[in-house]
Image (cartoon, rainbow, N blue to C red; front, side, top):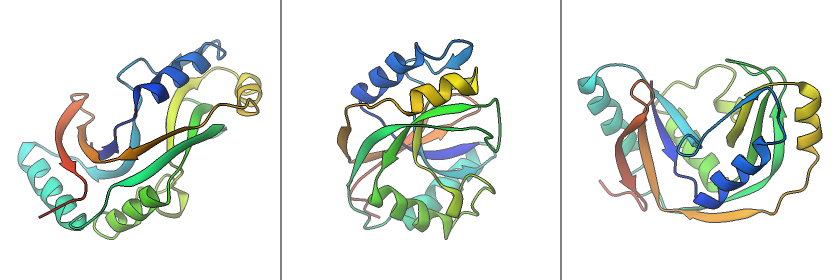
Length: 171
């Protein structure tokens, strides 16, 4: 699966790692695994990626840099895929939501997690107890704000970046 992701600053990764300590039995994301998915694009080989990334770049032409802000902790009790619960850092970003909607016009939304169901977030951990997730979700965290000036094409099969696009996006 290829996706277009927002790089998160080290402060966000550090916050997620600190919070994960309070989720016994959950599988925490490790440094370098913290991501913020803007839109899943599709699957395929290198040639398919070239087509997908070209379509995404076309859809983003003229798109500006935008602000993002970690605003708190929440969890999905029953996620669409994978182990539950999913505890995450909630992200507020009208600009990211605009990007997501723009990309959903070019790439079909994944049922249950994209389109109207899209909840921008950075996963802290999966699994463990719902009680621990609930306790963490009421904790106050200091907000982390940043400007997103680059997006990363991510190759989930190889767990590595496959390219980047700078913002504002040109042709």
